[in-house]
Amino acid sequence: MSESFGKSVRLHLVEGNPQGILTAEIINWTGHIITAPRSKLASLLARDEAGKAGVYFLLGIDPDNDGESLAYIGQSENIARRLAQHNKDERKSFWEKTCVVTSKDNNLTSGHIKYLESRLITVAKASGLVRLTNDTAPEPSNLPEADRADMEYFVAQLRLILPLLDYAFLREAATVKQSPLKPATSAAEQSLSPVFELTSKMHSLTAHAQEIDGEFTVQKGSLCRSSWEGTATHPYRSLWEALAHQGKIGADDGGRWLFREDVAFSSPSAAAAIIYGRAANGRSAWKVQGTAESYDQWQNQSLPQVPDAA
Image 1 (cartoon, rainbow, N blue to C red):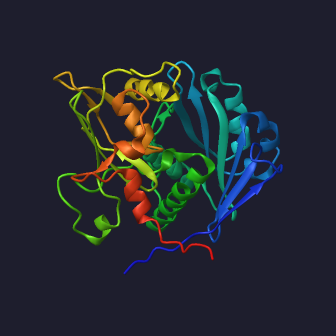
Image 2 (tube, rainbow, N blue to C red):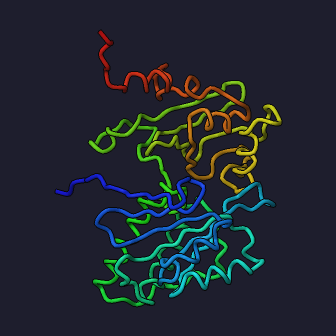
Image 3 (cartoon, helix red, strand yellow):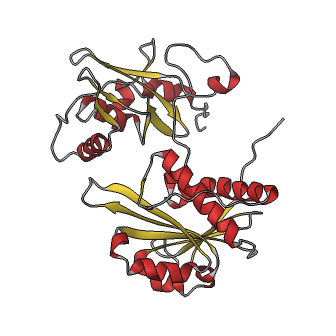
C-alpha cells in the first residue's frame, strides 16, 4: 500500500530579495534549479550552474494576444551559451524570466537532457496552461530502461517544485473528478469538495464546479454569458476576454456560450464573474448542488473547531 509523504524544499534568495536570482532544490533529489528575471541574465550566466548540461525554460507573455502566457523549453550541454544566443534572438523577445535545471551530481548526459526536453514539452502541452513557442516537439531519446525511470522521476520532481517558483505550466490540468449527477462513492471522491452549482434564471445559465487542489475548477459544458456586461475597467473583464480568445469559452453549434474545457480559477468569485459576465460574489452565488448551502457556508462548516480564548 503506497503512502504519501511530505517533501522539504530549500529556497535560497541569492541576492537577498525575491525579485533577484533564486535557487531551489528538493532534499534528497539530485536536481538543482536556478531562476532569474531577464534583467539578471549577466549574473545568471556567470554562475557555475549555467555552464552545465540541463534543460531550461523561457517564460513571458504575448503583449499582442491578451497577455497570453508563452514559454519555450530547451536543452543544452552548456546552458549559459544557449541563453546568450537566445538573448540576441528577436524571435524570442517575449521572455521575461528563465529557469535553469541541472544536476548536483553532474550526471545528466546528452541523452538525458534530450529525453527531459521531449517529456517536458509533452507535459506542458497537455496542461493547456501555456502556449509553447517551440518549433518542434522532438521524440524522447532512446535511453536504457533504468535511465528512463530516473528521468521520469526527475520530471515528477520538477512538476512538484516549479509551481512554487511561479512556473505552473507543468502541473496536471485540473479536471472535475466527481460527476455533478451522482454523489461521491469512493473514499477518494469523498475527500474532494462537493460539486457546486451556479444558476441564473434570467439568462438560463447553469454551471458546475469543484474545488480541486486549492483551485476552483468550472466544469466543461457549464454555460456562461456571451459577452462582458460589467464595468469596462474591472480586472475580470480582461480574464473573460483572454478565455474567449483562447477558445476556453465560446459558442456551441446552437449559439449557446459555454466552457469548452475544465477551467481552474483562483476563487469562486473569479469563476462567477466569467459566467455572469460581470463582477459577482461567488462565495454566496455558488451553492452545494441540490441544496441552498453556499460555498461560504460550506467552507466555514469544514473548518476545524477552534476553542475560544479564555
